[in-house]
Image 1: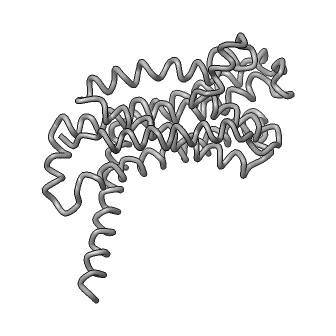
Image 2: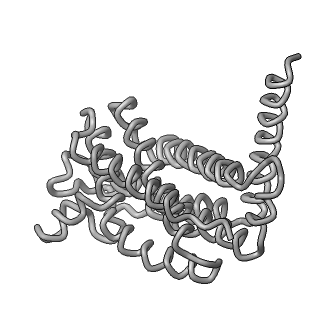
Image 3: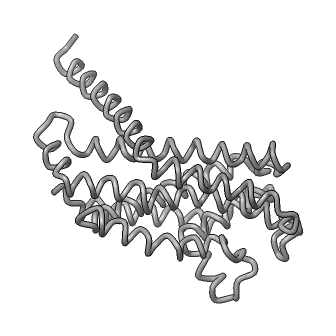
Amino acid sequence: MPMSASKTAERGSATWRLIKAESTLCVRDKVGPLWGIGFPLILLVILGSVSDLRTPVEGGGGLTYFDLYVPVLVLFNLAILATASLPTTLAGYRENGVLRRMRTTPVGPARVLAAQLVANFAIAVVAMVLFLGVAGFGFGVGLPEHLPGFALAWLLAAAALLAIGLLITALAPGRGPATAIGTVLFFPMMFFAGLWVPISQMPPLLRDIAHYTPLGAGMGAFQDAYQGHFPSVVPLLTLAAYAVVCASVAIRWFRWE
């Protein structure tokens, strides 16, 4: 085997081992699985048992309140991973000198970032499938009528939220500041996703603001897909813009130590 091909194979093997190791650590850390999957899943079951939430939402295109909560909880999972799991883990790595030590190895710290992104993305996929499955089989909530549109909207939402997580990591010097920044961002993002008040029920000003927040745009794209339409251009472009801008700034200002 040529030397270059051998090195490429070794790097690929090392990257795959690192992805498996980071995935194991993510599960062991319990932030992503417990708060990103377990808590919203319990909340989904509780909300599904409330009969009052089966009434149609005014301006919701025939969707009930519970129908709206299913995609909100999918976004809840992405928000938890972006504001809690990813930044606190990577900021902790920087604080403890892990990234600095990785710079002296052939693996390099960039692969640690890639492995963390893959691990969190995998948790998000499992959560999304689980939420849709429980909502469908347990409470009769149908799948999005435009599945390709929903898949595209979810991928863009995941990219936007994980890019925000990288940005938090780039700005926070350690685990404590990363947790504080993530907490401050989490609650307003979930508000504009419609966790407490459906977006269609918000005052006009808040509704307009919501459409240009990452989770509000994601919710708008999800609703289009649930109603059988390909998501509108505006929420998709909004999500893409968050992904590109936040990732670019994070890469530019990211500190390894």
